[in-house]
Every structure is written in structure tokens, then in C-alpha cells.
Amino acid sequence: MKKYILYKIARPIIKTFMNITFRIEVINNDNIPQKGNIILAGNHTSYLDPLLLISSTKRTIRFLAKKEIHKGILKNIFISAGTIPVDRSKKDKNAKIKTKEALLNKELVCIFPEGTINRTKDLILPFKYGTVSFASITNTDIIPFIITGKYKLFQKNIKIKFLPPYKIQTQDLKKENENLMEIIKKELGGTTNG
Image: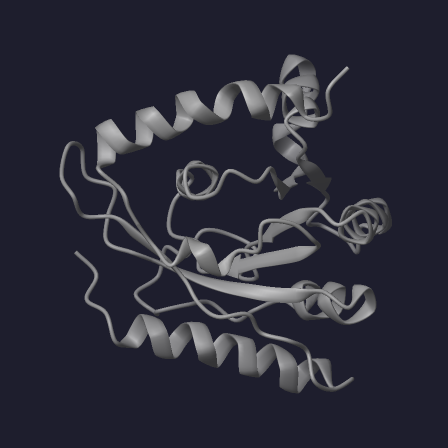
């Protein structure tokens, strides 16, 4: 059986839906390498963000997703789509192992470093360390991205922009996390949210 078969079936449907319903604009998706281990990391504005990302690249994206959605029949659906369940109430060892394995297997993993949807007026919430930690231990480049605008039906208002790769330079994860946050915050500061 093909790996992540549900993802591969659903992707063209999702892309068509997002393009028609929200008229999305994708900028610089050629910054995402065609192969190899990569982490996508950016701001989290809506529950629709994963669909926006799926619509933005032909590569299969492994999303870290809260364990609460992996229940009942939905559990098998999300797992066959390649998601990695995360228990946000603790340091989830199983999620760490699966994420590390995905990156060492040269897969594309998306992490929202804020850890949740930003419902505040701040540009971004403080980043958790997972993104830079995984990048460091697996020697993986990070492709930062920013999502701007609002998901408004049938209006061209939502954009996703992929920035140049960011490589972890030191073992100082606090500093690296701050650097990543600053890159994304600076890029968001130069835009106007709709």
C-alpha cells in the first residue's frame, strides 16, 4: 500500500477547494527543495493553515497535530494522511521519535512553533523549541514561512510566502529560536493583515 495514500488522494481536491474558495496566493514555493529532509515553520493563523500548506507544494507534508483530533474513526484518517499526534500536555516522547524518524527518512515536516493558533493581536506568539531542536539533531534546514491576510470567501486575501532556508548555526537553541522568531516576525512586520 502506498505511503500516506489518503494525503495523495486528498491533495488535488484540497488545492482546488482552496484556490476556488479563498483564491490563495503562494509566493516563493520554489524555496522548498524537491527532495530531502526539510522543516516548514511559520505563524499559525487559522485551522485552515494546514490546507493552505498542502495546496502550496506537491511534496507530502507530515504535520504535527494535537492528539485530540486522533480519536475514533478520525484517528485512522489522520494517520493515513501522515500526521504525527502530539500530546501537548507533556513532553511527548513518541511524537519526538516519530518526528525525528520522518526527518531522518528525508521527509518534509511542518511545525507551527507557536504551538497553537494565534488569536491575539500580537504578530506571533513565543516559539516553542521543538523546531530548532529537531533541526539541530537531524541536521535539517528550516524553511520559514509567513501567512498573511484573512480567509475570506471568494476574495483574494490570503497569502503564504516561503522564505530562504535557515540553517542552525550553533548549539544555543535559545538563540536559534530567537533568530527564527525574528526572521518571521520581521517579515510579518512588513506586511499588512487584511
